[in-house]
Length: 87
Image 1 (spheres, rainbow, N blue to C red):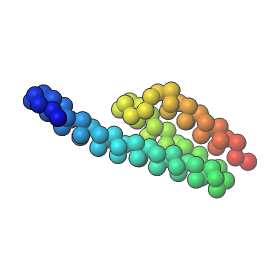
Image 2 (cartoon, rainbow, N blue to C red):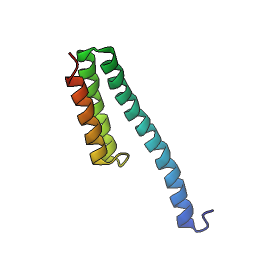
Image 3 (cartoon, one colour):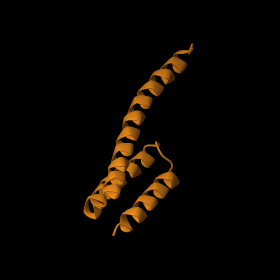
Image 4 (cartoon, rainbow, N blue to C red):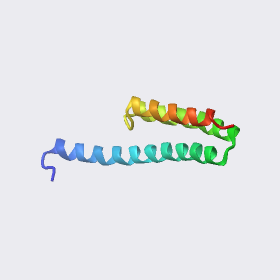
């Protein structure tokens, strides 16, 4: 348990940050799932639109420290390749 005032404050800050990051991570996962669903349905237009919507969300997660830059780049690259491969 935190004893010093500074440790108590850091604990409060960590709780708030956890909530924000959890919401952000959830929003990113939802946008990625929409791309996956569009790819699965075979609709290239919908998949492309979903990918365009997912990219800023994912990169915002990088700038906010939720994801590592290379992780986000890898996810975007793989999704883009799968969208491109739709006949």
